[in-house]
Image 1 (tube, rainbow, N blue to C red):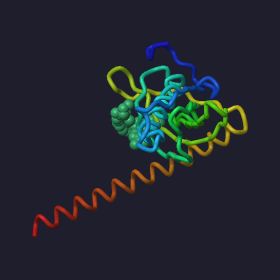
Image 2: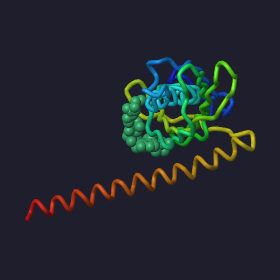
Image 3: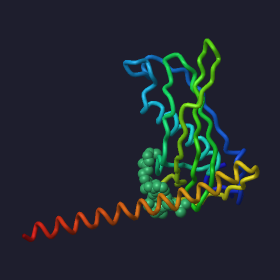
Length: 180
Ligand SMILES: CC(C)(COP(=O)(O)OP(=O)(O)OC[C@H]1O[C@@H](n2cnc3c(N)ncnc32)[C@H](O)[C@@H]1OP(=O)(O)O)[C@@H](O)C(=O)NCCC(=O)NCCS
């Protein structure tokens, strides 16, 4: 469906679920043979974007990489599986949760290695912000994530306002110093 076609008013979480598996090669690792954090963030961004595309069905841009926990390292030769889905849709933005597991290819042992919250914004081909369908949480876990996403958005907005205020204060102080 193109962004010009009529969008449904609601989508389910299940319709946004996305998954990606990668094998960790020497190019992806540091001197200790552990997956580079930046490479993992790239995989997280790609998997998060897949869920956002499935929800918005138009172009999306990454607005924020909100919170990432690196719980344990991923080793050279491991398989890394990332799963994502939309936690909540707002007007044009969507919060996506991404969870990452590593798998030792010899033993089959699977560990949870990272989790992240991402925010994507739907835009048209000119970069203009677009409305997205609302999300319909169906299971108790989906409802909990839906509620938590609102709290995180409020926290993000407070933080952004605090940073803007700090910038204004610094700019005003710089202006005062120039006058002296
Ligand atoms: C994200 C972007 C489109 C927002 O544009 P904007 O002019 O600030 O748009 P608005 O103020 O109308 O906000 C639009 C939405 O983005 C959200 N948003 C904007 N900045 C945000 C941020 N830093 N974190 C989280 N959400 C953000 C707003 O909350 C709003 O959500 P809502 O419509 O669901 O309420 C713009 O900042 C941008 O293009 N950023 C660069 C994106 C980019 O290059 N990403 C990396 C490559 S994909």
